[in-house]
Structure formats: C-alpha cells, structure tokens
Image (cartoon, rainbow, N blue to C red; front, side):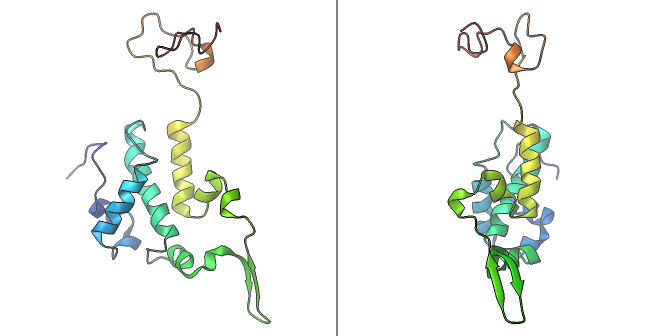
Length: 161
C-alpha cells in the first residue's frame, strides 16, 4: 500500500527500510518514530519527509544500541566511545570530546544514519528562502536579502529598517 508523503511512518515501514531493527518491539520503534518528529515535521519538503523520519529514528535507535548490526552493537558495548583499542599490553583511548562540547553535526556524525540525516536536513532547511505563493508583484530573487518587506507581517525585516 502506497503511503501519502506526510502520513506517519509506521514501525513496519521503518523495519522494512532498516531490517537491523526487525526484532525491536513495535511500541519501542513507535516511541523513537515519535521522537524523530521533533526534528522532522511537515515543514520539510514532501519527498524528504519519510527518509528524514527514517534516518532520524535509525540514528536514535543506533545510539541506543538497539539494532543487530555492528554499528548498533558498538554503541551498545561502548566500543564506539573509543578512539583506539590495542590488544597486546592493553591500550584504550576514549574520545576526549564531552557531550556538552559536541555540536549537533558531531552528534549526528556518530552514526551512518545520522550522517545521512544531516545531508537530508541540509537539503530541507539550508539557506534563506522566501515563500512566493499568492504575493502580488513578488520578488525577483529567491534570497531573503532581496525581499523588499514587509514579510509575514514583520515590517522592514529584510531591509528598510
């Protein structure tokens, strides 16, 4: 059954896209799908919405070590927290960056799904944009700096202050 673009992603659809989470209970998957909604909503372009929800959910679940893949298992065991591991005369080196020092991009970079989500996020939200629908006269440029104002009820936001 084909899903409309903004229909909620179901646990079954998520598991079909990310089979490493097939053994996770649907209630748990739904909880993470709901959390992904904090980042991905209907302001995203329709064609990026479903991949965005799936990638964000995958990232969150991988960080929790819920998948059967090596990346999830590395998170679950704590091995992903180490920069280097040596066996003979044991040497373990943890990453030095504290969670409070981590940028959003660094946090997403901890998993492959997070890296993919960051790419989707930049496609969905990067750069200034101006909505042109129904505006008489319009703006000759898609850049916010060229908008003569008033914009969205805010007089002089993009010039003429």
